[in-house]
Length: 114
Length: 115
Image (cartoon, rainbow over all chains, first blue to last red; front, side, top):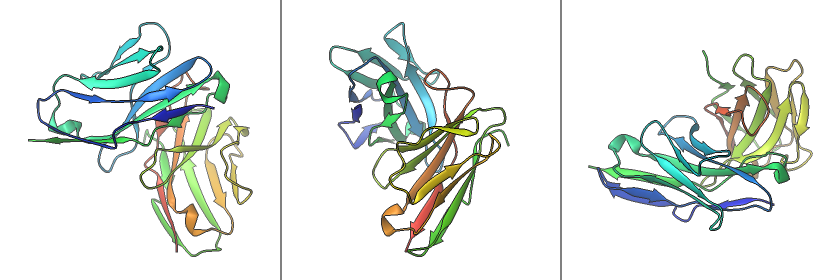
């Protein structure tokens, strides 16, 4: 069985500060990893994904995540956040062992303060 | 509209009643998924359709839950004899092809409240 742990339920930061949202997963087979974002009053949107190849993946709005197989982690980082980054962020994993079902973490609420 | 739509946006019902939740996927998307998101939790997989057939229904919690997609487009999630524990946001997503390489696009959800 696969699972995802998001270690922080809430992360408050000031604007222009760096941020890291942590995600650890467990899976017995090859994995594919995702970060989804949910802005206030909007639906879930894919932020970035790791399927294969380079372990460092980036989004168009400056977020990046690195797949670390030895530490079973896929932490999300941004060097300088904006108020508009305030949202809930969900880490998710899938793989052949789960018939490619997406398993989500509980989410991390990122609040960026001025 | 170009996105996934779900109706109704809110549904309030009484314990024991029957409800239907509708999902209109993005046109041309062959894969469709239902998830349930309880308060303070991430989305939880319920069922996945590829075309008209349920490719994986292992997430349905019990036989009170059933979903159909008769023409390979619109899907309906049906819940019989609702219980207070069924209260949650029910999310639908669609993708152009099967997972994992095809991005899932999510709808805004239906908030179900069982009194």
